[in-house]
Image 1 (cartoon, helix red, strand yellow):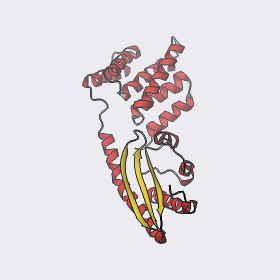
Image 2 (cartoon, helix red, strand yellow; image 1 turned 180 degrees about the vertical axis):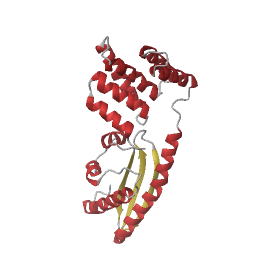
Image 3 (cartoon, rainbow, N blue to C red; image 1 turned 45 degrees about the vertical axis):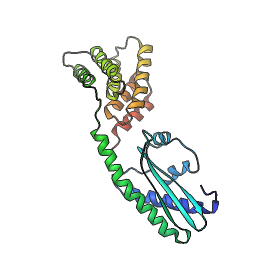
Image 4 (tube, rainbow, N blue to C red; image 1 turned 45 degrees about the horizontal axis):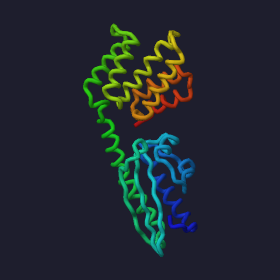
Length: 245
């Protein structure tokens, strides 16, 4: 941000040190330098970056030079929501570049690790829905779909009711989409055009409210591949469902 191209090497060095340090955490999936550097110097949408790279969090920052001192800012962002999880700034002299790099890298890594762990704990504790009526209809739909005296049509109606009660119930969208997969697998689709349109709508809802919900992604991915015929899109959703958290 200083506008001084001679300081570019310093910024690149800091970024590489942070990438290297983060990659030492075995439970973290860290994007390599070549991929992350494609966004260098551009104003980007963090949600788009998360989608393109398949990551849940994005660390971004800047370097500003003033005389013989440098200020480095860094912030950790949830790529799904765009919300900030952590931010800090680091100051130091230019004549101690390696020391400042170590300070930045150590501070960032030290702050990121517990923040990510807490974010994942909070995510794991999250309820699929706050509406117990919607959850009840969802469970009925699952039971019906599994053959407990019900049918796919009955299950679909139950999932639709759950969705009406809670429009943000990701798993209900995914299971509703899966209801279209079952008859397609048995070659029993009656109105392909209508059902393809409905599956596409359900998949869009899953992508909007359930990017981290394995059940929603699995149901949507299966239906997208089998009913719509979008094998690549379906595989992408299934990959996300199977990705480690």
